[in-house]
Length: 469
Image (cartoon, rainbow, N blue to C red):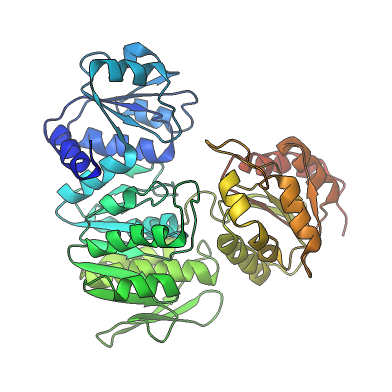
């Protein structure tokens, strides 16, 4: 199928309520999509080599989840298949689907079809901050009972997707180019920093994906006026636009007066004083909230709907998530894996913590590591110690110039940045950190792979340490 025909085909399949099999259903994006499809009256089943923490929630609502891939999973009544990018076509369930002539589509070709069919939708995109911004928006408009499909979970939303009678809020992923399929009522872009070199050949290719997304918005494009690329693409998209941010050019403009105080002014002259909760630390999270508030403004969602929810806002899991706080040592995990994200997390840590900051960092994908190799060390300025874990390849195989040793060399030649220690595995990274940390330290465990395990390991050993100042 050509790209232009895929969405129409998926829309027909959804409308017919044809049974679907989801290969790789345990991932956060696939699990959320499964719940949305089931809410449309579709019989959903799926499989995963490692079903993960969402499998129980899926099974609880009647979605059958198998461990492992087998040809029996795509027999009748399955009429079509959704494949996670992490699942190779060689798997038996997919091979059997091919033999039956079933349509096999990507997740990023299904969620846009649901967005197009929605009567009121918001799609949140951007290299950084899209999970947090979409999560905050869903929480703000909770009284409207939104439907959602977001690549993260938070205190109010234990699953990454769900049905509702209100607006549909989705996180729109750009990693495989399917961002260009989204036609939302409101398209929000947080920023456009070059990423996903495994799919995009150039910055121009990457930007064109966002350009298509913004140019297809039905009602309005909301963009971060603090980001030069998002601003340039927004102003050129040919749609009604509203910029947000701390920039003087922002239509929905914030003034950051301290760790918790935010003043927001709107194009109609209205000014809001907002006290951010402790669960929303840092200026970059205030910026994410500004994006959500800008959507409320353009969708004419009144203050009486969202204002009562400000005090209970919470970040998605692994967004500056405190996993241990004892014996004078605090351990925080964060999903940051791009230099821009890492810099923001460390800056926020410095605002909140006066003592030493130690970091365990796991690079994510070989293509990203090689492409941004020189940019990584500077993102760690202000850190007292860095332990580098091996690259988390995701679906990629190692490539020259992208090893953790290559990254360590960049740290060694970067002025003003501490040297980095290389660990052979996550267990050794935890051991190195346990030997180094002491009372008064903040430990950041950073990366998009399975490095969060290090946070759990440290949480277990801290009570047994002989900590000292």
